[in-house]
Length: 298
Image 1 (cartoon, rainbow, N blue to C red):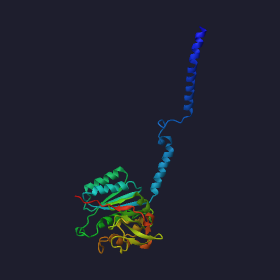
Image 2 (image 1 turned 180 degrees about the vertical axis):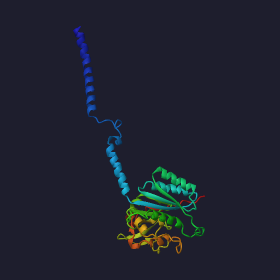
Image 3 (image 1 turned 30 degrees about the vertical axis):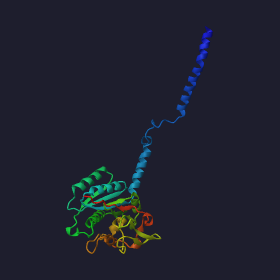
Image 4 (image 1 turned 135 degrees about the horizontal axis):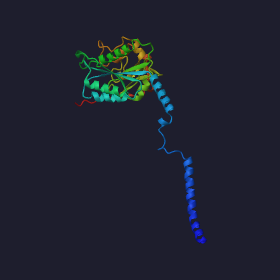
């Protein structure tokens, strides 16, 4: 009998030892192995105080940025909403940008009103909706367009800051709704001290137009149309500091005495000189904005 029990014990002993070893190894691994990624709490729950501080820091950094005002004339046409949508999708990615959308109309249209309302409700883009009608006599071919609308945007900004303290940080530019903008351009223009300039792609019948820069100064213009203009530059090719706009309350886009394509020069001559221009976009060698006019098919 004892022999039978001994033989059975000897048979079961190796299996018993194997089970003990496996259990021991499993326990050791659990003691030293880091927890599974599936069992970890989200980072936002691990350090709520740190996350809150980081969010506040990001908010403070954003609020410290000079504000950018983008003035956009627009008018009713089949491609209007498509082009405004493209522009809005760019602007909503730019921190501290306020979009001033000015309709060429006697009263605001339902299309633009709904469009602006949806943007404002989303909370991703700050907007102002204005309207002013271009007189019929100025709608003939060959005459400047968008004049009354750009001036309405300038008037809104000046009224907003009429009681503000001096040296307000900020910059404004004129963003036509048929342009396409690189996000990098907004980083460039935000540091404008007075008037900054850069190239514009697909303008003047060329692949690009640009200021010619030597030793960090603008000395001329590479332009496909009337290169002898005082400022041979496109409306999309410059930005102006908010302080310059407020310090020159009479600087506007003029109708009388101005020709198509000359309004940029007429406006800039009221506020700056070529020697004062600040070249951006790697000394005006990078194209960060393009005229991408929608093809007329209707």
